[in-house]
Image 1 (cartoon, rainbow, N blue to C red):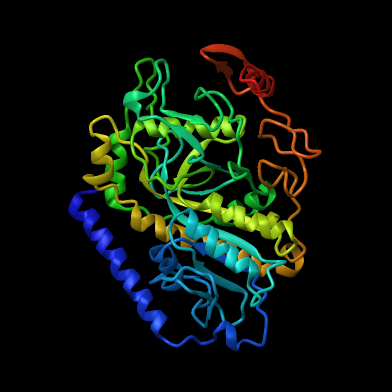
Image 2: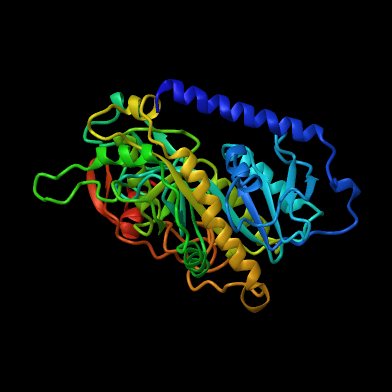
Length: 429
């Protein structure tokens, strides 16, 4: 987008944020200190900043929107200072909150929700609803995806690309690793999360009947990615040039708002490596692993059910430029046109998901959707055995996948789990 357009967008967010200050000054319908009943929501919508929330709170001219979420506005201690309230329907069936942007805000807000005495979350479904950047190898502007995996990009060593070791194709390597293709030897537990694919597929089924919004600017901009490969007549970025659609796809989580082909390729590599080849980088967002970690900790203590989490993202912009422009242009000067349509598409598709859950509550969703895949983190905190991760935690033997040769000091030592352990031995662990 043009710089003036970016400035307008930022000013728009500022105005939107100011409106939230005004709402703070308005007396709540109900505050937590005044409540004598506990709300047991069927769905909580998790948004990250006001434009994502306003798509739900003020869905202008959108048919079949859910009932107003402003009937109850409840202050929750520990929520973000700018967004201290959770907003609920009069029935309490659906609620919405804003975490604040970035991983720290997300983790803090969701942890506060988990510990709030105002809510019974044991049967609640959590719908993470936010905009994102999109990898043009996988998708296009205004796409909506439902994720199985979310991978954290920030837990890595970083070299400035101008100073990275010879032979490296990226300046990033996992913690404890000495090459970009080596699995991390130091893991924190938040690197990868896997969600309930049965629930994801049901949500995708509800959402697939939506008619997605597109913009003239996006239609025009996509055409720049219609590039022919040297050996084939099909476009290199064939997914980037199609109309928006509802898809399955995985998310890369990073507080750093990166742009460019090389960083995009680094994100692809990290997603593949950390998930042992199970995940494919489709969209990039800031908060998801933080949100999922806070929810997982609540689930570990039976406060909520982690199998009831849905991760939905919509593409506002491409993560890398087409060949005719620079990475600087990709971030600052071109008009991609995906911001408004991605926000609308979250509300359009998410409404179908929420209506589906509420309408089939007693017959299908109240008892939960049993997962047929592993769900949880890299440590197996909730039980079961993940397909990702390099080692044994407790009694959970992790079956690593062969995702590429691991090297130590430039020498190949093997692939997958066996390569990981060879690397440990080579480094004296």
